[in-house]
Length: 269
Ligand SMILES: NC(=O)c1ccc[n+]([C@@H]2O[C@H](COP(=O)([O-])OP(=O)(O)OC[C@H]3O[C@@H](n4cnc5c(N)ncnc54)[C@H](O)[C@@H]3O)[C@@H](O)[C@H]2O)c1
Image (tube, rainbow, N blue to C red; front, side):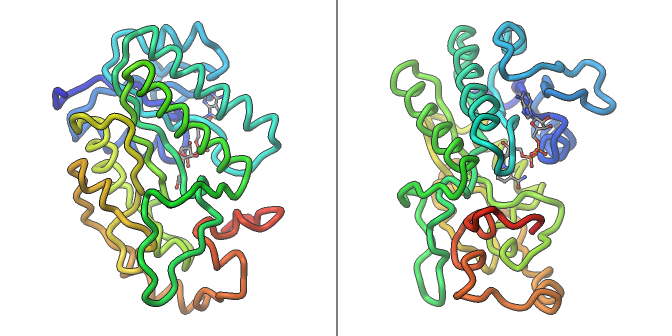
């Protein structure tokens, strides 16, 4: 894989897309932007719905890879998730297949395995092979995306790294996030590794910084060449003083997916 590549960034107007627009060019990537909404300050960005197959065909022409962040990023009615996350991701892979794009990085989520109990005490870190346990229709759509990625690798030779992102925000805002936080700079490092590592087939990785309170194993991410540099621990004192420790009896504290496991999910968190 060449170091400098043209990458289609879907979801470019979103929170993570905005962070990555700033950070990925320094890793040598030239970005083509796409979102349902206009992207502020980016008049050349493609404004298109993932439902628009013609627009996707046009968007993928001549690119080397796709960083697929677009979609509904919280729980929503199934019909909406179906359209944006399930059919939308399928439409994008079809466009990639037709255009001969060889690499996708898919924004999966901890919510694909959200009903996995979080480690307590000396419990081992959650391995990336842990069985799927989606905590929402949203998480279920991420399971679909990972399976779609596997199918397009096995059948069509399109490589994907599915990144089960924890929480990628400028700073952690909850005690749970201390364990799954991915700093934006580490996010860019991980996406860069996922875009450029050789021979990934379909690889699933956990996406977080090297947090002191880490819940999951970063081995498959490190195997791509990802070297996290950040740790949420400097935020721990303040967040614990404000919110108190996680309570094992509280379902929103007991599982990897946090408040997404409750019905309905607790917002905000
Ligand atoms: N931010 C995180 O910590 C986190 C954690 C886990 C997974 N993820 C995943 O990463 C991706 C980005 O997350 P985010 O926090 O930036 O979410 P976000 O909601 O801020 O951004 C998503 C973007 O996708 C666009 N979009 C939605 N439906 C679309 C459609 N049909 N066609 C085209 N564009 C569409 C939206 O307009 C929005 O700009 C999402 O797929 C999310 O599920 C994020």
